[in-house]
Length: 572
Image (tube, rainbow, N blue to C red; front, side):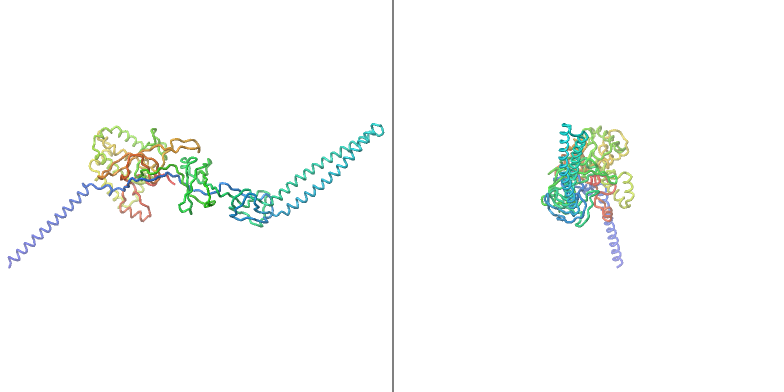
């Protein structure tokens, strides 16, 4: 009995020992698998990066502005005489023809003035007949005295008196004739005032406003009071205000369209007619007026409508498109002379100078870099860009101080998540990328080892804000004239780089030629094919997603990640 219990105890102990050993083996296996997956397994870049496919589509580079709709031809109808507005024959919205009676002012005073002036004129005309008779009599007396003097039958004094009477009669007639002419002129003015009491339409159109009421007294002594406005609504003018940063992209005759709040997506098209050279300055904001005309056959456009205007600076149809955030613009890609992109300053910063120096060294080390395997170079480039915090996709509109301040505002969990992501990227890149990054950061070693790391570090040492601040901005025109004369819309080709994930999951950096750009997409002229997968930026950690959801932010790259975000696009 005792031997049976002893054997049972031994079996239980052995079973317990085997169970513990099995658990230890399982735990060691799991730990080994986790360690291998953590430190040695190659991760799919699509799990780390936000990606997009190259697609075909249409793109337009637009300059946006707001404006108002006004009639191309209109006239303000006013009163030329003072008096009470006795009758209005129209109302707002009435369609009138040229010469139609619009309103009447009380003519009582003007009619009485005309009657009095006519009576005075008749009186002067009657007096003229009397003076003409007196002139005839004076002429006869003078003739008789002259004949008598010839016969020595009268005195010289009588002859002189007759002659003076004749001259006086002629002078009186001349003076009276002048008075009659003056009275006639005054009468014409009074008759004109009487006619002004009736107001007629100076042009055909629609009454769009009425500022006076029937029975209102109008005072035209100091200025002409406006009664109504007539406008021709068959052709409308859109008056827009364009900022000084965007007005250089406009040219006379360029295509433009606009929408209104109630148009439900309907577009009206036209051509830019004029850019007024005198700006409007409000709160230190300089705006220029741009005008274009559109037909209004069905009267769908009304005066003072608010419009959203889109000037088409460039357009391309059925072309390859990539997201703006996926492209890094090369420095000095504007042409052979190294033209700067729109928005760059005249002087270079310290980071830009160091980037130029790094680029020069990169050119000197191309021969040795070619001897390295392609996979090693691509991995080193990926590691170099991922290890540099400034190479990540965000904060393109911030200075270094603002980035640092934003990073300090992050919670410890968000900072740790960001470090983990960059650490995972370095581990995925492999030892070659780590060694190249270490050599680049320390700036030590011989020229050969430095040349191997310069290719991947040169692009990362360029300030991402400077490198991507122009993404989304259209290239400068190759031909430009002074003032607001017509400009050429031919764009100077620009070059940039994108990161492409191939079918094997490897990251490759390619040079591309860019065409039309806007704040969202870019046209790729060469360097990519339809269906290629490009890297947009880093994926957000779960903690950052929750933070953005709480603050109401819309997607994007996490703080501290450089790249071409919405802030790099030209904007309105």
